[in-house]
Structures are given as C-alpha cells and as structure tokens.
Amino acid sequence: MHGFSSHAYSMVNADNERVWVQFHFRSQQGIQNLTDQEAEIVNANTRESHQADLYNAIEQGKYPKWKMYIQVMTEEEADQLDYNPFDLTKVWYKEDFPFIEVGEFELNKNPENYFQDVEEASFNPAAQVPGIGISPDRMLQTRVFAYQDAARYRVGVNHHQIPVNSPRGVKNPHPYSRDGQGRMDGNLGSEVHYTPNSYGNYTDHKSMEYPPMQGGNVQNFDFREDDHDYYTQPGMLFRKMTKEQQLVLFENTARNMGDSTLQIKHRHINNCYQADPNYGAGVAKALGIDLKDVDLTPTPRDSEQANDEANARGYETLNVPTEPATPETAKDLGPEGRDTNIEDPSYLADPMNDPFLL
Image 1 (cartoon, rainbow, N blue to C red):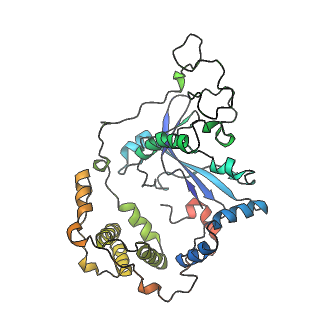
Image 2 (image 1 turned 60 degrees about the horizontal axis):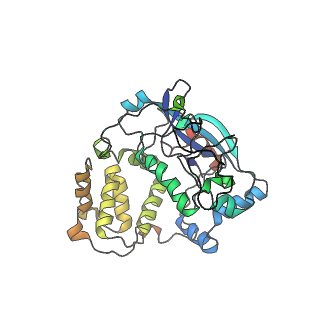
Image 3 (image 1 turned 90 degrees about the vertical axis):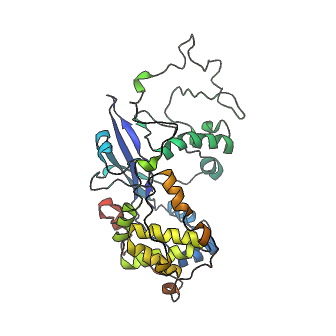
C-alpha cells in the first residue's frame, strides 16, 4: 500500500525561510485490493495475512520498495488557497503542487526480535530533526503531545532508550527526561538538566527557532468558519471511479453500515448526495431506502452550532435500529466478489498515472 504523511509539515532552510510540505511513499509493487467477499475468506484463515505476505517476501529476497515524493507549498500559496491546506481530510491537488521525487527505500530485513523492534516501537511526531517542523494542522499539534505521552504509559518513561526508538548519529543527546524506571544509559551522570545553569549545559539553540505561525484565538477556534467544504473533494474522487467501482462503493457502504439507526443512514445518504447526487442515490438504493424519504436539504456545517443542528436532524423520528442491508446488486456475486483491480497494478505506482490521486 501507499504511505502518506497525511498531515502537512514544514521545512525550514538555513535562512529561516519556511515552506509547507507533505510526504508521500508510493508502493513500487502497485496496488491491488481485496473484495469484501475475498477479505472474509482470507481473514477466516489468517488474520495476519498482509503481515505474513510482507515477512515471506523479505525472506524470499523479494524486497518491496517505495519511492518517496514531497509536495511543497509556500506560505503565500497557502494564504491564497480556497481550502484549508492544514485540514487532515483534504489533499493538495497534484496539478497545483507537483510531486517531487526525493528517493527510494527498500525493506530487506525482517526484525530479529519482533517484540523489541516492532511492538515496542514508539512513533512520535514530536521527535523532529533540524529543518523539519510541524504546521498549523490541529490534529498534528494534538499528536505531537499525545503520542509521546501514550508511549510513556504503554512502553515506559524511558522508551526512548530502546534501540528502535533511540536517535542514531547523535553524539550527545540531551533529553530533558531523567530518572524513571528502567533507566540504563548512565542517566547523564552528574550533569545538571535544567537551564539556566552555571556550567553551559542545555544551552538553547536560538538559531534553530522556527518562524512564528499565524494564528488567532488559541482558546477557541471554530475551524468550520474558515473552511467548511466537506464535499468538493469526495465528489471529485467519486467521479474518477468507473461505474463498476462506484457500484462496489455502494455495496460495501451498505453492508458495513450494518444495523445503524435510520437517522445515521439518512445522514450518510445526505452527505454522499452533497458530494454527488449519483453517490447519494447509489448508497440509498444499496441500503434499500427510497431516496424520496430522505431529507436532502444541504447541511452547511459552517459553524459549531450549524454542525450540531445538522447532526440532530431526524433524531426524534429516525433514531430507531434497522436491519443490516443486503444489496440486491450483490446477491448473485460469487466468492470472489466484484474485482475492479487493474491488469497491471504497478502502473499506478507513478502518482501522475493514478486517477484517484487528485
């Protein structure tokens, strides 16, 4: 599968000039997807099918590769966009912000000890190298705090000493973390770990301070007032699909909504309809719901209050359980389901060839 930073990050050069950046990792193996029916069979036999596939490929010398690309956006371009470039749910259009190839990485060795090298891995976006920083993405800013906090509880306060989490090539690391259970690296000896001090330890590197970010009231920022367009990009992606791919989307959606209340099903139909009327109609049909019975009034969601009102729509009359749907169009499908994979999956490795990458 492909990898994405999803969040926008920043890159800052030696002159303290900043650009915004997104990272992409494109699978050189290509992409092939399981149908719902195939997934049921595979999962019934082994829940770790993808993990086993990766492990066996590496053991057999079939090393998987990914090409790394970046998209770059200047601060001026970000200010002029008609959508929020720091919204985790948005993509940067590749026609406007072309993919720049950076390099390639290959997985050619399996972990020697799964527990130490995989289960104790503690990924943390706060662990940054000079020149790469964060952005105004509010989800990223939450994760910068929360991920390292979660690692302290899950792995331990000294999780950064475990080899897979320890920085390489750093001669004199100076974390503010001292003591704690499981400390085994000398605990920085008798060195003080506070500043200011009389010994020149823990000196701030003012030259590495990032430029200030624009912002408003930190106490209460209603992001919906800035960008509440939730439907343009989903509609564009839907229209990139073939008719058969759209049908699979309808069928999968209907099955996976299960016994959701009628309120939730109507709301989702409405959301899909706002993205594209054919999208909403297709989901409604697969769910066995008459589109005429659904309130299709647009929900602007341009403020917290408007969002709450939209979510409350139908609560008094539609908040009732439903039976799981079995789409009529899928009743005669065989055990392989409806396969929509392309003949040569590696063709989509090039981002410019991928129609689903907007």
